Length: 155
Image (tube, rainbow, N blue to C red; front, side):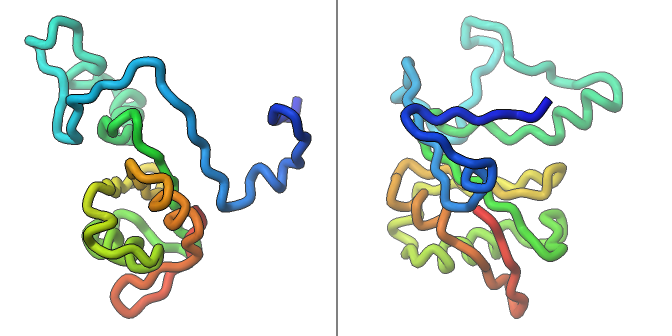
């Protein structure tokens, strides 16, 4: 059974849905104002931890390894998929972050709140930003230059 997509008020094709440049934005009912990217609830937080400290079994280890760290809930997220054989595990995260910021034509002051995380299991980068303008700029990126190599990407 094929997966069908629904957009309120307008019908779109599967190709339009999978095209680059889409930004999904939604608000959360409850937002934490005091959250910082390094925060994580500990045992003294008053509730049980979301994940066990040590996953058991090879399947659970694989699932745990493919998860991203907790990112702020009120941020926009842009998923960047490298094309042409670029391996996320073999490139420097700092160099990729610099390349993404440069390709999006953002300056260091504009991108200082942005967070770039690599998901090695899925071979993607996830950019979390509090600014819609930055998210739109990252979504338009088609290629990045890491070192001397030019890589095609899809955001």
